[in-house]
Length: 239
Image 1 (cartoon, rainbow, N blue to C red):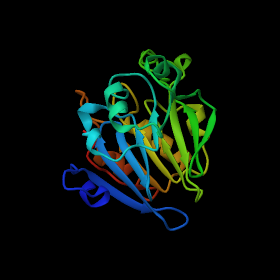
Image 2 (image 1 turned 180 degrees about the horizontal axis):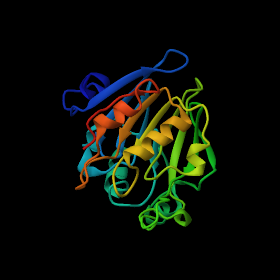
Image 3 (image 1 turned 45 degrees about the horizontal axis):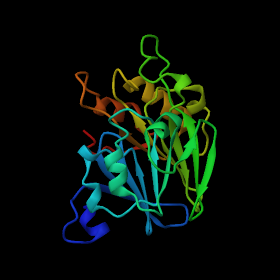
Image 4 (image 1 turned 60 degrees about the vertical axis):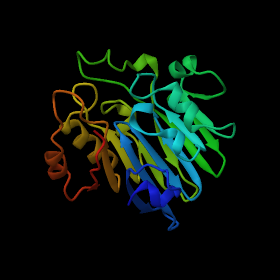
């Protein structure tokens, strides 16, 4: 399915999508732009994660109800893209470092915080950081970058992890229905780490994201083999 059929309008660009049903039988559509940039559509509500102008034509897309920004790295935060996708009714939720670079209002989150937005959607911030020796400067714990759990009014829980390795906070998560985990060496998870995380949190559906664009390629086929029978691994182009 293309974004053309979801958003309508002859000028809308096309992107790869996947549609699932939430616990109430409502359609939830994920649109995959690139890297860590995607959208989640629930009825007439639009949630965008880590918008970056290079990855999508945001000015041509429906305005956001919610924008989630995990941290301030250039491949996750782009003020121009935020401006293109937001209106005065949009809610921007971000980590504290990103908030320092934003003009305008934002809901600033640190790990462990929760915020409810219009439509009965609950956003929970989850710590996102590196744990491997020699990698901790990429995403230091003390900076308090965020992944997010999006709980829909149906109770369906979607975890978008941001840039992180498996952390105690992640491995303790419960009742996750859909998980987006980064598999991008050396900055985020290895295949083995992603397998460890999925076996711990047991989502019904797992979307690998934020992979590619580095010399060390992610072995997506091995990732799928390792998780066969554990979760439904769905691979869509995010490179």
